[in-house]
Image 1 (cartoon, helix red, strand yellow):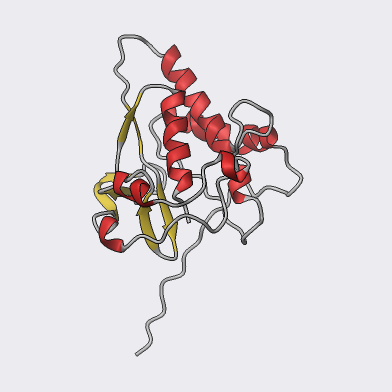
Image 2 (tube, rainbow, N blue to C red):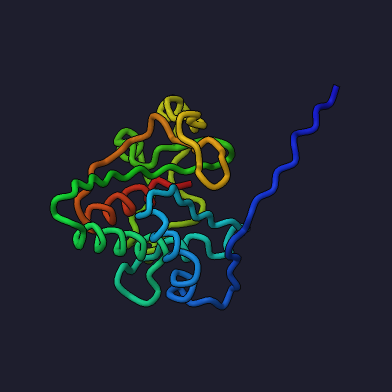
Length: 192
């Protein structure tokens, strides 16, 4: 018996053209998500496309302070700016996780055991670009503990769906943009 999976509808809120400048893309599509994040919503940005189409360049780049800075460094800067400007009586804890879904396998890119095995070149050795087919192929033993589950106790207010949670990956406490950039650099080196 062949069972057909249920039909799903996915919304694409903002597809970008190949001529978009990083700042224009951030302002139009990502900045509103940062507002929603600080309002308590979970937000996700997905870069999808064939190899060599510019996903890594768009999401993150070698420079964190230029007009070519990618979306992730821009989000890092904005989140840290807002945390610094927040009410000093509020307690805000920031943690960073960095996972990769590659060939249907979940990889913890901040797992210290993965970094120790990594023969991949540094960002500077790759002209600052942290993408492409490099890094190592780790056994799944380090990633067996990572799971993506739906948490039935938390419902998305708008769509009434359970919110997905990543369980078992490394969570690094961070205090500032520099800490987050270090996590981004470390994880980017071991990406596939």
